[in-house]
Image 1 (tube, helix red, strand yellow):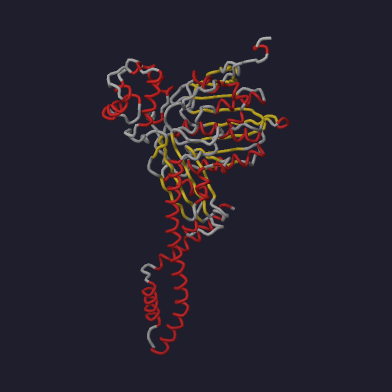
Image 2 (cartoon, helix red, strand yellow):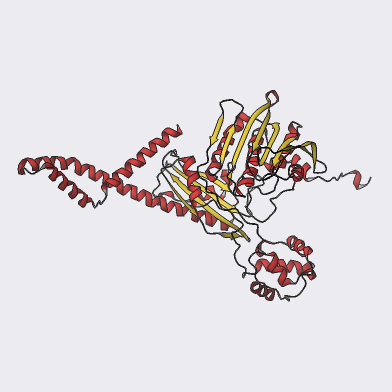
Length: 533
């Protein structure tokens, strides 16, 4: 009996692999599948709009396709740049075909999201996905019904048609029918939409559920948008042997000096010559002559060399302090917000920026520890909080140093953007403990916490002054009346003199402003509570 009779070998296409292991992409059960589908489609819509400076308007409609079999219909429409007609089949029907394999910040990481939606739908309901799209300034609308040939990892076009674009619409609309549990997924979906509004307050979001009275409208609260990321080059410290081999194949005759300058971020002729001296290679040597151990040594030296410039941050698109504050204010309705956008940093040659916001008071319910909202490349991370580096850092901070006594109305928002987010798992729901990122997150949270401490200190002093003023004023009126009776002096002049004396004693120059500010905060808190209720 030969060995081939004992062991059977077979190949899996990418589509078949992810169909079998759909929990890797978050499609582990009907509840999670509804949430993950909406999340993937909304993220694609946001990338298709804000990356091109289009203010996003996104519609999400959920209905029952067949309630007896738990079949859910999900429709998502945006006003983005659209997809060229000939690209639609591959974009939705071929795993690992995407526009997200460039070096710049993306919401997605594998370019897998929409394809997983198709795979899950046809695995549970055997129905095709409906895609309708019109590129910017296109006279035509392209419509496809698509499935995926699992074995070949190729799109299957069930139907297609082209329509005249009479009203100048542009964007993409997707309708999918899948097995799902909307009632259980609803809370997670609502939280996802709420958190998305926190980091994208320039987006208009409408979600309508199966029930007629279920409609959530998230208005656009600002027209200011972050600058889109630019497409970048790999940093020398982030390369591996396979990447170098791919770059060499493009032009094996290129001199080493030219190869370094043209293919890597922040490498000029001076730095390239210094590095080649460090490696012991001639600048005019053709790069294609690097083979085997020489190639491995070349890559090793690239990582060891400390003369490279830091990675540029042009490939990133941070939210910005003002926009982040607008979003947090709209969603959480706190008494006060403090924000910070840290300077760019890097890990393993990958640039990243950490942003943080601290929200205090107002409509935030007091809790025994800070409420944490986590974001990676503007995507809300809702699951797996316990394994996230942000949660770890926030819990390690001694908040008593910042005058916080729990239970307290305190929320911390942390956004990490990078060309390569170090997720702790394939589920992309938690950030791993990378030392460089951990340090930046800790510094960002401490920076906004110091601002809170100053605010609380000032509020304590104001409250102390208000208390003293109340006590002095209580007795001042009796003093004024008594002096007026004894001296026959004008009571208003006496009252004015006593009030001036109290202010001088308490060192208050604009006491009316102090009282008005205190009343303003109290009234705002009450308004926030009523609006939230």
